[in-house]
Image 1 (cartoon, rainbow, N blue to C red):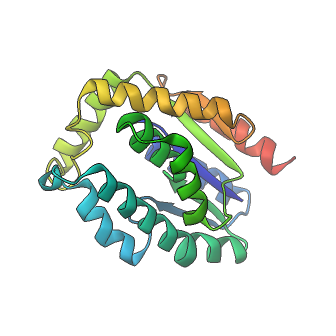
Image 2: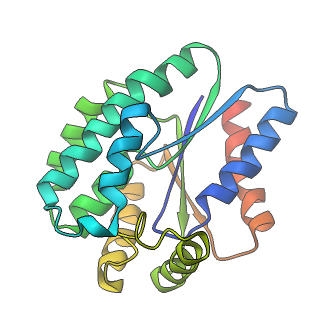
Image 3: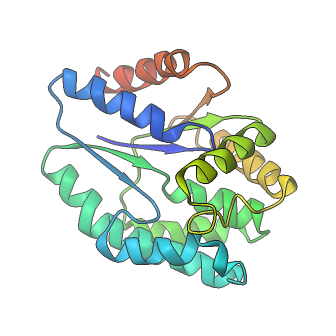
Length: 211
């Protein structure tokens, strides 16, 4: 099973993925946790370019194609082989982020980006996408504090440096896209305690596993 987690910065995707991994392993599942950008060897190089604050001059088109290249390599080298080996794959961000950030955030064409994503994933879409929804000002404050604490303000702070208006557009993009694919993308309120949020995530995942 292929499950992705989406949302603006600071929604707690990593925390929920860790909780879900532990739960699935307790059920006897073999689990692979991965991320975008950076889930493959080549992707790790692309991540440094895409997230570094030093590359704020990266144009929207170049940003888009770097994300698509990362995704294509990630699917071919990591995600598809793991699924074929019988593992459950949990991924922090995937194709929906491109639509939310580059289309709704940057103003590019959402349908065109969906077509490019279709090419990049080579037919491999998640069976379930958990969209963690949170007010942009809350998520952004969390993300900035996290990067500061981890010393990543420069190395991974390019999107955190964007305006609140940008993150508001991205959030709306995620919600709009969830409305287009309601069977795959399930929205979860990410404003509560991690354990409360996970109770909902667990229910969504286990209903798919048992369905």
